[in-house]
Image (cartoon, rainbow, N blue to C red; front, side):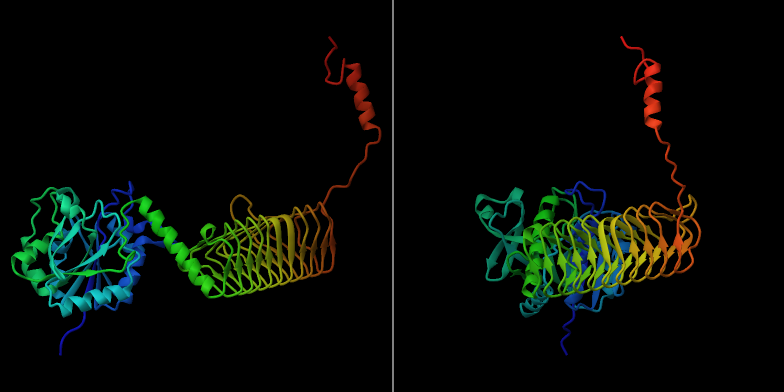
Length: 473
């Protein structure tokens, strides 16, 4: 029986030189995921027998970011070129069960698993020692040109700086992704040399080596746009725009209204149910889930949160790591964070901040309020200007407001404190003690009116030489 399996080796050891960054390129964000995550998921979806990732610069951070079952890391302590990456991988490649190996660059996020499988299938059909994944560009400047020997055979990959005028007119370019038959690869890997202009061991030099040994080198052309390799932050931004528009198009075809896709930012892993409307300037980040029939109004940012059905988020809200129940209204200018839970039919109004708190079903906090480390019961009403004073300078303390409580405007609830079911607190109160159920709590100083005080003050100022206590000129 013919063996049909293949393995994938992801080259991700280098430093992001053209990014002008201390971080590896694979750790830069792209449309809500790390750049390296796209290649890893694509490789896994293609169904290989083994997946290896070569790491080098900031190797430990790379391991932490991408660790998962079935992924084997290989460390390239010195980064001496793409060919050197395979040289240091030799022990693992000798143990690899696959007879075909695909060397993938770690910065090609648009490649599809179907294309990777088609590359391997054609490599087998052609009985090639090496197959180069190519693509065509309208402007191939800066890329290595594919010089064919006829049909699918490749004679050479010629880099831009040594290409002739005729070769520079070739629009088919090398993507840096190569498929190898493992046995000839291991047989000739030792022939790679760093005696070149770059002073590096280059993977593409294997094309010349294989041709010298009369091993077939073939080319497989990827569909336009799939083999887009990200070399710098300009290209990163271009690919991000493409991915975000593609995500928006997928959602719109599934029943979501996005009024201006080019002014809306939806990460790759966000899920949105049909009949939701998303207005311009909205950012949906991370693993946010949005139910059906929601309305997300302009310039709100929602990250790693769950919104149930029929939620309205008014303009300029920030919601992070929260759970919003069905029929809730939030904003405008509200800030929900740190695990806040808003139960169904509650209302969170303008300039209200909710932090690490649970707001009960049908409860209302409509104006200029801070609720931190609090539990607010069903149908409670929180008056304007209320603050839960949850931090005593050492630790955070809880506030509990039970069902159907009415908190008056301008209240300070000094935690830890509990306001019992059905109670009222008077406007302007500072509540420092628990309030029994169905009670009225008044925690403010008695008002004193000093009649005639202003008149007497003016007289005193005049006697001292003027309203400012100074003698006239």
